[in-house]
Length: 342
Image (cartoon, rainbow, N blue to C red; front, side, top):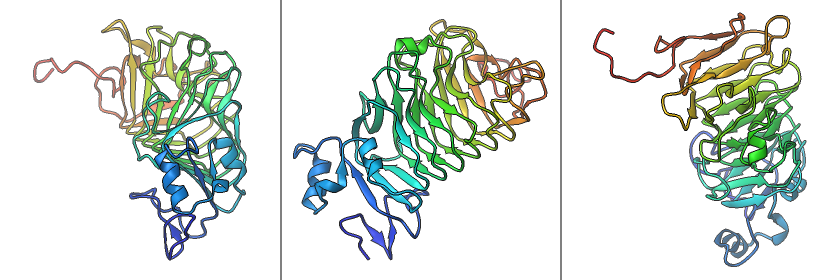
């Protein structure tokens, strides 16, 4: 019942921990390991080595680990805690390949406080991870882009359908030039990024410096043409800005987002160095017709925002919410100091 040295299994089904992401299911392919360093002082490496895992099955970057996988057979990269530095885009083009961080579900730190962190500081790396393989899964990792250049656009570029993310932190805009470049964000969703699911994920940050680009998205920027049917569930969208036009999510081009996007039980927060001052809107949606950023209707369900005046300034029959009225449009926080009945 053991697949030693490729991991622990029960009747051939690999087990990686507990909870909904513990089992990828029957038919799991090759197990590939990531370790921050191949040194005896790295106890993860030492443990794997002592248990008989070959050095040839352990890799110190995501690029080399991914190269050891084969598409369309559910190969899995298991990443032990540590920082993994990339100097070029990781071209995640292999369908049905998966990444699991082994440091647990809390992946909200950065590369100075590592759990499992994959990042770049190299200039002009457009996306740290560029996903063009369908139906890939990502768990318990942080992916960051900290290159101090206007060409360091995002941490993750999603451009293929059916991908799933759980307990993943995606952070761009960590360097000063990124924070003043309107096109820079944390997650890019492009034309073929249809029906992704993001569960318990984190986008952006509040402590690397203020974002200042006009209509710049701290968290998510839609690019390309009409990716459809995405779902964000119980996610956090974080921002640091005192520039009124900065937003969390941007759909800046004609139909850069398609139909049926859902944000469910999500929290949006902007840290402003001027207390009591809100930014203009959480979502920037291009308009008026015919250049709507969302081609069809998107929905907020049970969401909360702190630090913005409105969900969106675009009254163009493209964006809807179901939250009870707290603040304009529902779901916008207020100080709990009003008298009963007010």
